[in-house]
Length: 408
Ligand code: TMP
Ligand code: ZN
Image 1 (tube, helix red, strand yellow):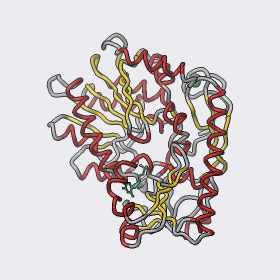
Image 2 (tube, helix red, strand yellow; image 1 turned 180 degrees about the horizontal axis):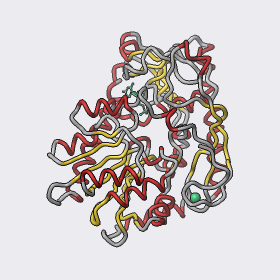
Image 3 (cartoon, rainbow, N blue to C red; image 1 turned 180 degrees about the vertical axis):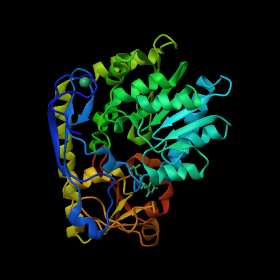
Image 4 (cartoon, rainbow, N blue to C red; image 1 turned 90 degrees about the vertical axis):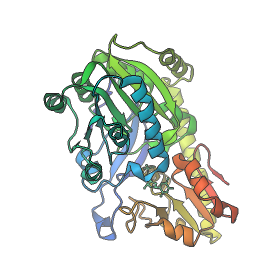
């Protein structure tokens, strides 16, 4: 999908302020025979001064990104599994006190979040167009529609199951270009007292940590509360609560409801004020962000090149979606990184998008530890550091690039 200079959320004029150059799709891990046909696009970002949303200038067609080979499984992270269990406890106690509640999840992936509601015996429905992950959810007994959500689908769901008490979306809204279709659908889907609770990587965190690797094909937006507020208010809904989350390198949980149906928590106003204080809406902030990205790129490539010259073994830790932006934007040479260790079978034996570094099973890292591990899974840092105590104690070094480039 292309845009010709207007914000997808508020329609104001926008201009690109930064280009990351030619990029492959972040999750398009590929075989050697596929190198010659690899898809690339120009990854550049715009910022909307009216609603404070960062967004891609162009996004590849969604069918190229979410399909039967989509390799991201929520359940692959213990931390995310734990996070979703806590998430379900919190929303259940706050919003699901009605008789026989109905819970719907947008982008339900392998069913990790919905499984928690299933255990409570609730009626549920997943919506997940990537068949690779949807099948895993179905195997867990979670009814899953392999479709993209909009008003039509909302109507079909209501006709078949009735309206929902809770509509969930975790790291999904930022993937969807036409959010107005989703919010119109949410409005139809939700009961009068129903709420939509969703989480997405937060623009404020990205700016603070220079975590530019949040920007890739699937993340068409990085939201501020201002942008989310504008979006829901356009459709007669409102944001009644917000809560910062540490997941995905810094996320925000938003609760939206039909206007006037739930009290608005003070922390909504507090966050709006904080965004203004932190100049989240100021174009100068994005000029500074761009300079910080360039500085980060320079530092990281200097370290990797120097270690390569010294003959040190450097291995990437976790073939994350975000690593695709880092490797391609920084123009990392494939010989600087021996391989990337990853626990997802679907990625193993393939190569990283664009730069073509081999992805190998985690066991290789464990059995023959390198001198340096480049932490692509920095958002899972706590979980990984805990797991890799032996590597660190035996003198293994870590290369980090968020929030600063450093060697530990
Ligand atoms: P993501 O950041 O795009 O969600 O990708 C997470 C990837 O990281 C996934 O392929 C699994 C991998 N991973 C590891 O290989 N080891 C780990 O300890 C963790 C937490 C993730
Ligand atoms: Zn806008």
